Image (cartoon, rainbow, N blue to C red; front, top):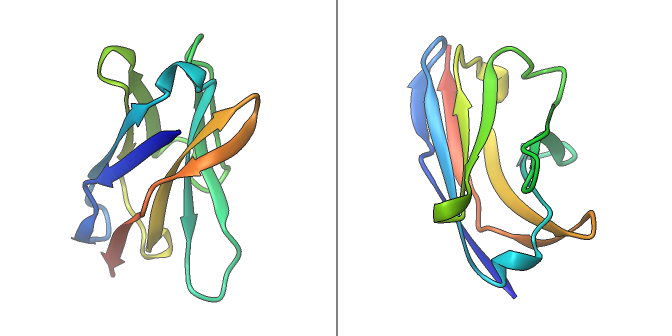
Length: 117
C-alpha cells in the first residue's frame, strides 16, 4: 500500500504561481510513475503531468506545457508540481497518483487550486 498526501493548493490571481507537493509513504519501492491529475465539477478527470520514478522522464498535457513543471525528490519520496502563469481555467482539485506497472493504483485526497481573474 502507498499513502499519498498533497499540499500547496490555495487561492491565487491569474498570472500567479503555486507549488504543489505530494509526499508518498509505504510501499514506495513499488512505484514506477507519479502523476498529477485535476478535476473540475462537471468535467472528466484530466491528466496534467507525469514523471517516471526511475529516469525522471516527464509528460505534460498540452494545456499546461511551458507553464507547469513536475519534479521529484526520490530521497524524500516527494513529487512537486510547479505551476506558473496560472489561468482561471487551471482552477480544479488537483490529485497526486502513484502507478505500479503503469497503472495508477494509489491516490491522494486532493488539494484545491482556485485562480481568480
